[in-house]
Length: 213
Image 1 (cartoon, one colour):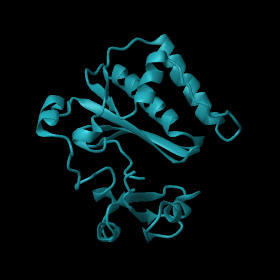
Image 2 (cartoon, helix red, strand yellow):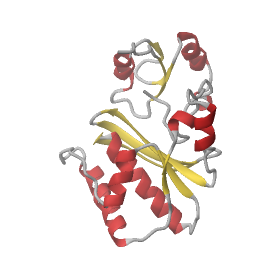
Image 3 (cartoon, helix red, strand yellow):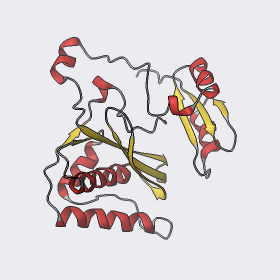
């Protein structure tokens, strides 16, 4: 079994800011903190440098990414289609505070963002992000495609059902109402927008990535 690589966590906004050497320490700074901003780095020096800089230069970006795929594999996969939007979700815990967003794939310019929601899961967020993207593109009569890095969310959208095992309660009632609206949209609308799996191993993190754990 390969040894898990150590990560360092920069917290720009949280109960305490700084560089933390474990996810548990980082999580303690961001839990129950509205608008927390943080990101993981491979080295302490990189995390420390980021702390001194502007988080906007780091969130959603991975300047150190280098694909481990062969040249032949990369050639077969090709480049991303930039006539697209990319969607992603982030959850602090499972369940935990969840949010999702959609961005322009090439410029990373935000198109929509929802949350944070109490007691959500990453899968629910990924599902809602795709449906939100579908509704947005249909409203704009756009021919752009949607990229997501979640196979689970793609399957849920195809089945027109959110197959989460998360239990509904008073804390996540608003979220489940949003899920119901998303499922109803899928059942009452048609669309031609292709939903495509983002090739993380070839291209790095999806542009809509929140740049966290």
